[in-house]
Image (cartoon, rainbow, N blue to C red; front, side, top):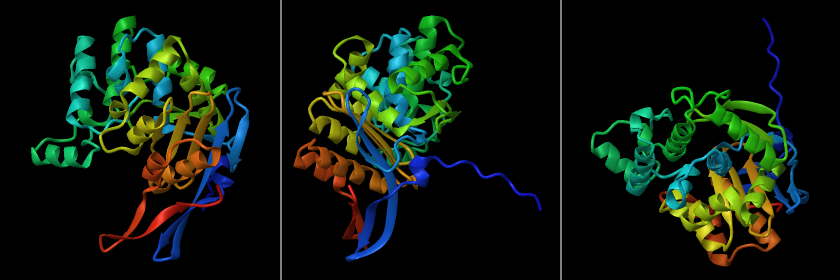
Length: 327
């Protein structure tokens, strides 16, 4: 019997301390390990829980950086359409209409999209979509705004449309250069994200620093991206999403949630926050973020209570909660 070499595990996962308890009826039923970091405007670490030097895939938390790369490459959208370019949207009607608007502006239709077909993320939108007898489609999948904008960027530059997801494509090379610059690090791995586009592994502290740089920008493409996120958070997330409530609730803040329990936040003063729950379970993600924000004195009670609201249910009724520990 042959043995297989084990895949190296990032320190952000292997050395992650317990950061949340799942409490049911006063009994700790489960625990979540995680890593979190707060960076200063110069990128130095102000607060660290676990080892933030370990690389992680930011997943959809990378989208504002990808959006920045597109703006730098000539994408002319602004406001709500630029927010959608940076979005993991909920697939509500206004999201779908905006994605189609981006495509139409580039002379394209949704047949050009190569993101993975899916149902809408929002519960009500998904139920209505399925009840209407419609199959999974790329246009309602949460990354359609990003992919529509990637295609629009290719049209502006005369780049090939069929291969826009290839890591060697000029668009993806522009994204890689932006990730390097904003995080101040060299990605340690490249893989295929859930939507089919490339994703780059960076240290958690580099992700935090990149969001601080975006949030503190006062001019140029960086400020344009940050302004779109602040002005149209419902296009970045959706009507019922915690990331939307967070951006609305804290002046000057930008944020982006990501799959596998990643969250990244930038503050207007240039500080950044990034976290990763080691097991990838999203239920502890916003709870950990709220605890970090309380620790550094950011955010009012209303928005932090929204982030902390993760009830544990018994027979459909709250019988406990997911609570942060050790922060």
